[in-house]
Image 1 (cartoon, rainbow, N blue to C red):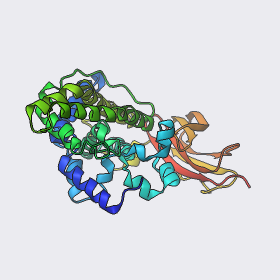
Image 2 (image 1 turned 90 degrees about the vertical axis):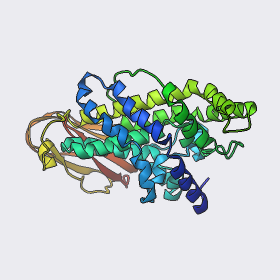
Image 3 (image 1 turned 60 degrees about the vertical axis):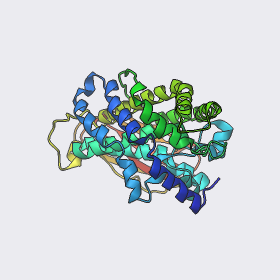
Image 4 (image 1 turned 45 degrees about the vertical axis):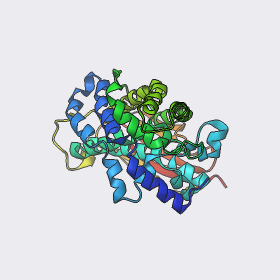
Length: 372
């Protein structure tokens, strides 16, 4: 259901007080991402202190940026299709097209904020702007950590719907701050993520199942003591929740490492000690132009320019990220290249044109109006 202005204000104010996992929890996840740095990521060890120290910058921005709060949560169970099928539209455009911008923003944009921050991280690496890249990596760590907090993925974010009001702070801050020393795990080497959007939604879908577990742990702890400040309550809450809380921390840290590694690979695996290139086009080996016409009816022309001989993969993807057409998949010479797309047997709507040269990925939006 749509949040009213008052409830939105309460939620944002509430989030400001809590700070997600709390500064302690966010620092733990960001710093522990280094446990999953594979041999190719050793230069990123120099980023670890920055990732840790700036892990909560995104929370602090809520004081001055009214658009920041919605980036930290997703009330996924307010989406009727999630209740029916366990998934929701996985691009922001498709979610807005189906439900409207008020509904989407009112229920949080965590997954899309995470994707957008990943894209910014990759783009900074492509430009060899590692100062800004570290800033985006720190923000990415925060959003990834939020995606591994069960109460950030449900409309019952504070237990207010089940008689567990206040569990948000009790679980995410009070308990974590007291038990952070017991959250110990080892990392597994990060590997490349083939579909970043799907990867982010997959961990959100997987972590949603723990919402009921948090509530059950609170119910058990309250049965042992109704005094939330008591050692009996706190010990009982930890005893019933540590079996899934510790893995959530570990998975969050690993996800951050994997996303940083993937951004680096997509940027062309640049040396972190390379000098900054002021002209980002000189780093790219291709320039993708907007298709013409756009929107289009029966067919559209696509052009791009290569500044060196390159292996080119040019694809069209739908709003779910599925490939619907591969237009080019071969090595092409330097110069301007032109091709056409005729979307036979496809529905009208929004499509994405993706140019991948191995060194650089560029995307353009195309609107197909259908054949008349």
